[in-house]
Image (cartoon, rainbow, N blue to C red):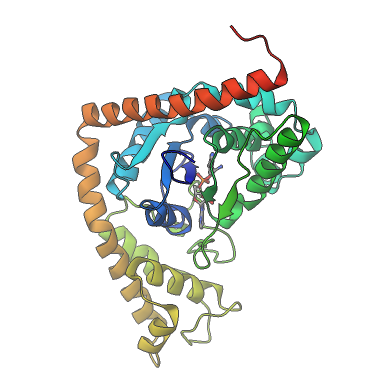
Length: 332
Ligand code: TYM
């Protein structure tokens, strides 16, 4: 509990660009939990270093992600918004938790296996340690709830295991967090291969919608979206492409899927794709104009980042000193 409220924590790593998948699967729920909880959201820049980054691009991208958080409606007055690398306690707690994590536990993570096969020339320690850094993010803030997409569920389970293990070995130290995964949209799929997740770092630009895509690009990508050949507009497991479009339309318009299906009774895929494209363009328009204003004001963004880092550090310091004390490190 912080200031009498339960704590919500989540983060995004600044690789590629923020997609509609990240928004629908995670950030939309961050906004929903905003009022009721004490909310903390980070740019997980240290996580992004597990793959090679071009320094100048990386710096720019991380700041762009930060501006997009605010443009999406995360008010810096109501949320702690900060960069992970500005709070040294993340790396410090990671070392401690490393000593409580078995190699087999991180080695069997699906994301580790996928990333290792994708970057088989650079299977570094960081890639394997990624979930432990993520556990540190969450546990430092004593988070109760972690809103994420389904792909992060396994990492959350490891986080819970580590918290429980530490609490049992010493005494209650960490809050054991629960994942918060939406019933709808927990996995938004690629527009080009709708059985795979829409991924920020997909090299095929037609597969993803970035929050900063121009209207023309959005319309074109939806027009080319892969569907199927039976021509019926309904949500069904055996119709991944059409179901994905329906989920996206529902998320950006807040209309139920059953109502959308009714609207489209007897209509064709071309019409559906056009309507989804238009709804997404309309949804993105105010976000993009707010983003353009924010990204031009670096002094403001840096002042928010500094304020966020200070607030985050104050909480993180408290947890870390508790941990240091419990494990028996000499206190100054
Ligand atoms: P990342 O940066 O890959 O994704 C950010 C969030 O978006 C969700 N997501 C999706 N949801 C639905 N459909 C998709 N296609 C889709 N793609 C991504 C992710 O589940 C995530 O919630 N390791 C994390 C970042 C992280 C983190 C944390 C999250 C670092 N520390 C602490 C929570 C708590 C990651 O790489 O997410």
